[in-house]
Length: 204
Image (cartoon, rainbow, N blue to C red; front, side, top):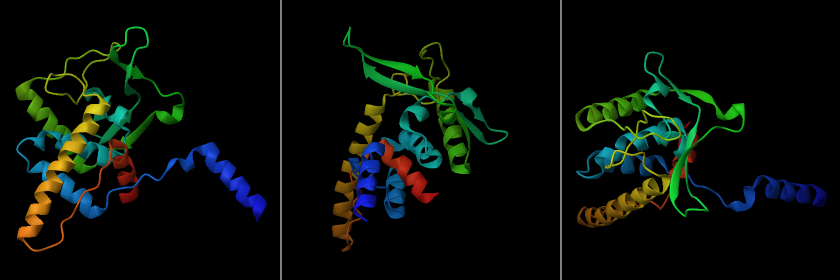
């Protein structure tokens, strides 16, 4: 038994499983979060990207890297073949966006487009038909789906910062509403984009 345990510990260290548990949102937390965004006068335009994250299990860099040409609406499929990375250059000190190709063939995959994900893409396209499409060029690639208020691809840190703002606003309102309605509040814990990947896997 001791030798088996030591092997398990060694394996955990090797695979990085000792870095802590990433928790998924519960069904109630997920529903509360998404319904709050959908009905919010400011946050509603974030509904498509969070719907895609929750409905595909994509990493945030893969989601932000999606282009309209990666979507096959006829066959309801999404091609995941690259991702966006955002980092600080050592020489200039500037933060830049780059396209990163998967290191292995396993990183390139085609995933099904759920109905709600299709709705999210169509909602995003309808809004951009009025406001304008993303024309940013990153490493020769164009036609990115998601954009910020400046018309550029959002960076992952900005999306995580938005999650924190939404959670903070939601929880503050939920505490007040629960007090008025004499019930326990449904509090949403702090989480990041990557927790939505775990939430997708848990629902699946």
